[in-house]
Amino acid sequence: MTASKRREPALAAIALFLDVDGTLLELAATPRAVSVPGDLREGLRGLSLASGGAVALVSGREIRDLDALFAPLTLPSAGLHGFEHRSASGVYHRRPLPSAAALEDARGAISHLARQHAGLLLEDKQFALALHYRDAPHLEEAVMKAMREIAARLTGELELQRGKMVVELRPAGATKAEAVAAFLAEAPFAGRLPIFIGDDLTDEPAFELVNRLDGASVVVNAKRASAARTRFADVTAVRGWLTQLQAEPAAALGQLPAFGHPASACHAPSPAAASGPRLRSRA
Ligand SMILES: [Mg+2]
Image (cartoon, rainbow, N blue to C red):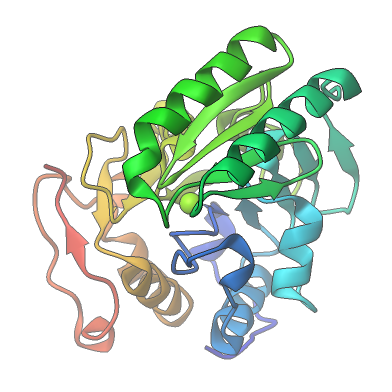
């Protein structure tokens, strides 16, 4: 994709919200093991320019982590599942912090758990703590039981968020739906039709919100029930669709039910997108 300063009419009508891990980037063994290909970074920059800045990242990572990953590109971003928010104009806002005592309690208990079992990895996100068990899937039940117990004694401060081979204690009350709603209340997102693409359970509230707003919800590589109305097969399909969105916006948007494509039918990709997205109709 090449960057364009020309505003594309079809892109001026949409607000694009993108989860990162499992959506734009392949999941890796550890959160630090991911990398952002140069063409993805340039593609996002081009889409942001062509849409008048209405492309945002909505992730479970911290915003500072997103900035480091995508540098030198900085996009409007929501981090820690909606706990923190940086608008298109660069204004940073976050919800009230969990208490230091609650975070220390959780940090201590999860560190202890991770030290006891090989294959468990604590990801300390400052205001959220994630325990990854990708290398020890047999421990899922024990991990969930321990994390539920920690969450139960920290009710109102931190709450459980399940993901793919990860369970997290994150600040209570923050959701990706709130993050998207906050963007849609401000320029340049306000008044546009939202599109949200994500892969995991934390993305479901955002799917439900954009459905209510008659926007487009897209789930990636999900073998579970989802509120999303369109499914993309994998990260490659997402990247292909984003490439097409810049090259032929009307054709790319036409594949989503919100833009006229029936949810029950499968769209044959145009010749230009033959190597791009692989769409599956909703199960
Ligand atoms: Mg994800």
